[in-house]
Image 1 (cartoon, rainbow, N blue to C red):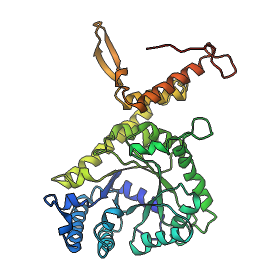
Image 2: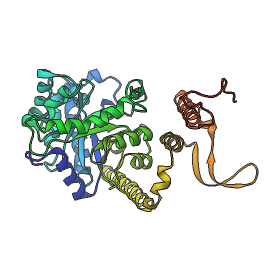
Image 3: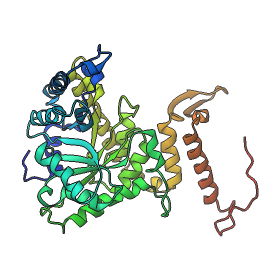
Image 4: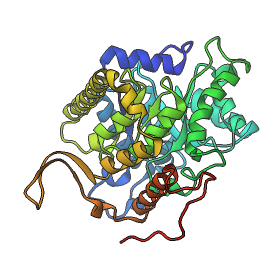
Length: 386
């Protein structure tokens, strides 16, 4: 990878050259390195680090034809030991072919000289091309990673992560109507990239990407809408965390079927044939991309009909589909009638699902002029239902 080129432009070159949106994760868990070991403290640091390097190098060698990027997770290397852990991470990064972007998963977030020191460690000492960052401390915590002498680097900002606890903060509503914290972060990627053009950046300001979990297709769709079509999204969670590849691609890809990376770690590292598994994942992603692009083409004449659907209705339909509550096909009902769809409301079983169901009911009531008084208040006193 040329050090004079923007990270995301080089990523796009790699994606196009091998027709792949697969990002291969490098996470040397000790339990994968030593599956028979019941006491890791008995292992020397050198043993742990040698095993970690071999583990990662085996994955790299097997997946090079299919990897759009590699994503080593710094934490697993740091945990290997104080003397050799970070140097092992450096060895792994140096073993990756130079034309393949390396995204270092560090999730840093600080300001001033501390952020600059983090950037120096990631780029100058470890040789990464891009990093993951927490944006919650604002632009000045992101700036050191993508300006000045690092204007050719890139960063993915944590936006709506794949863990359930991300809803505690990132899904909170702001004062703006129907905008969550993660949507504001998605909007800021463009604002900050524009701001960067005056901060000693290269002539083409560095683009910022987003980390949005594939486990929440609705949030993924909303983040894409807020960020626009040109922002790259890293969508973890497919496979081991339960994210559905097709649903994630429908929600996160732009209309051209690109600007999204699907990172996979354990799905590849635990496969007997890692090359074949990576090829299978790449092909699966491309099949999902083709379906999205075909759907977009087929739906071009239906734009007016789609616009007639209110945002809350689309959100509820997308959520129902992602939860398996709404299915399309051919279903024989208890009455004997055949239906082209099946809606099983009993699957709204979690607190979060019931909350979204209630929010949809409330939105539908407030949108009905016969049920409101025209001043934003309901025209009745009690809601009764099962």
